[in-house]
Length: 313
Image: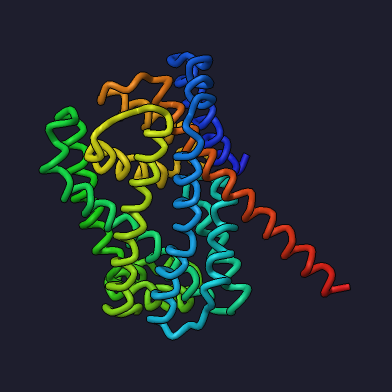
């Protein structure tokens, strides 16, 4: 068995193991009842807001591409975000769809380094703002959560901000890469380093500003889902928990974040007094919104493929 295949088998095992672990500790009947009895009007608002975050993120991506002088339409970038959401459901980690976005945009524009670099910076700016929001909310949320959660937020946020700043330094990445001569295609890597560090301050400022709005909407989506499920907590709980949940989905230990997402919801909201069944229902409701949105992206992707085959015949 190759190393790549073994790694994917381990990811599947982690996902299934985490799901099995969670299912042994929650009452599935109560979880289903919580979902069945949800306020669907509020859930519809949460779904609508989630869908609207995709063109919002497309504007963020476009700001970075504009900084590199690469033209792209908002409509095309929005479609690629829908497609990426579809692949996030099935690919390893909760960011596997980013790879698909980069590949598809490369096919569109032939700007491979710029596609990969801006997708990377696009995701990174979202995480950096998430860390800042988590730290900014701590003065209002630390009394609502256990000390261990507060410590975890501080450590993850500070480490993430430091690591993110280093990763945005294209020159630094280039110097490190040149000291590793065994890396293949050094000339293409140089283009990638320039793409990561060359977006410019104005483009990064626009991307970070859009990231603030996106992350606030994402926190609001989680808050509305909780209200729809009759879970009433202070909004500051969500400012504390959603950054940790979002960060956990970037860890390469599961398929589509399955198991990790559910476990994080149950762990964090459980310490806030939410029953495991309700916390799991909150996680599943958010995942359901993601899946429905992703299926729309999958349909678009299939239609594009069919059109491509038709053009070739």
